[in-house]
Image 1 (cartoon, rainbow over the protein chains, first blue to last red):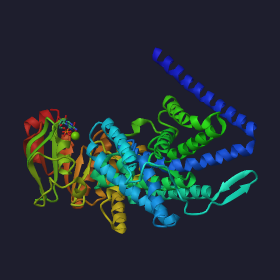
Image 2 (image 1 turned 180 degrees about the horizontal axis):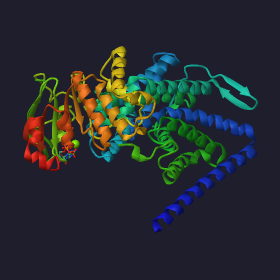
Image 3 (image 1 turned 30 degrees about the horizontal axis):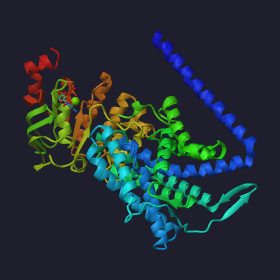
Image 4 (image 1 turned 90 degrees about the vertical axis):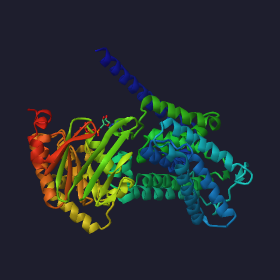
Length: 333
Length: 235
Ligand SMILES: Nc1ncnc2c1ncn2[C@@H]1O[C@H](COP(=O)(O)OP(=O)(O)OP(=O)(O)O)[C@@H](O)[C@H]1O
Ligand SMILES: [Mg+2]
């Protein structure tokens, strides 16, 4: 009896929080629209969605890897950083164009992430989860500081030279650049390819099978270690592309540039439901929008943006820890 | 001899699950391994499939040792396991589950032909091809697990308690199909707690008790053994 009352009141509290959130968001949007006019609002929304597409490229790697080995690969943001630097060298030192540069970045990141998995995570596969998590944080620090050495990438901010001129179009008051079009177009293309791999190919099916039940997968003759490597490779290729697109949008790179986007993409993956591919995408669009909205409309927003990102994480953990598309944890064996 | 197990010892840490068991299978046989909970039946099958490594003893497939071969290379050598509790892929469709069973095979036409053969044994799977594995009933899941196990076209099929949790009628049906699969040329190692049922289809049987084989013989001999009758047949 007592049990059912607490359960009921807990549920009503959750609904109250939902309602408060909905009212708050609606009020916020209306307030913002009347404050600076709709154009300004839609510009911020567009920029936010654009940033969200880049976050999605990182968040998918978190979610894919988590789905298969239940590990938050905290070094993932740093793989993204290496992608940005790889394309930087390809463009400024070798004079490569955009497409070869982005392919180069994707390949470098793939190799890097597969090596990280083999060297750092694989030996800990049967260890307590916290051990692998701490290792991941260690790998992250290693990548950030090691690449900051003078004879690697160096510790300074470097201006990223875009491989193409920026073109600006205006629709009413709305500004759209070719960068926005490229980010959204390319990300959608990569998402489509990823979805095809996961749903239709033999490797993708084996990946889903392995995520569901590793010992059953081995009984099918699936090389589980190979599938895990493949998953790290897929996530890294997306993060590498994300690093290039991010650098093109915000052309200042340094070895710690992966930290915040990495963490926000992680929040996005949790918001969408960690382990869920559509969740990572939707969560990222929301996260990018929140990020830019805070900068655009909250007083001192550019300083508070990171705070808001982690506020989102806390709210998700309080209200629905499984995220928007998350399944109940019992689903995983 | 298709499979020969010699003095097999397997442990989980300090727990010694198998303490020197030996048995063999001739081509075309149905051999059953019966025993109570915790006797080590599943451990035996998991070791044959390469999921566990013995610390002593050997397993020979067609005279060749396989104890150092990883699980994923044992499947293409002709051994397939239908694990205890089915372990079907709950969020893959029936079709995808069957495809995973054929993971180590390349020829698409041949795979399609095997799938048709599975459908003749389990017509119900054909009606549910696009349904998620996890939404099937327990009996259907057992059929899917067996169909999936057949998809690699094994010469030796390991079945771990296929009757577990099924209604008596369904158990009869499953055992009919086991006989059928065997008649089409697949050797079968059947692990069961339902001793009466298992011995009724098997050629030979072994009785396993706390990691040791305590009795072996033709199905008839095992069935008529007084200890078996009291311990496993409830008499
Ligand atoms: N993963 C494990 N870790 C530790 N001990 C285990 C593990 N799996 C099995 N055991 C132990 O090994 C022994 C044999 O287990 P096994 O699963 O092979 O028995 P079984 O004959 O298949 O029983 P059942 O009929 O209940 O399925 C048991 O004592 C069991 O507790
Ligand atoms: Mg068992």
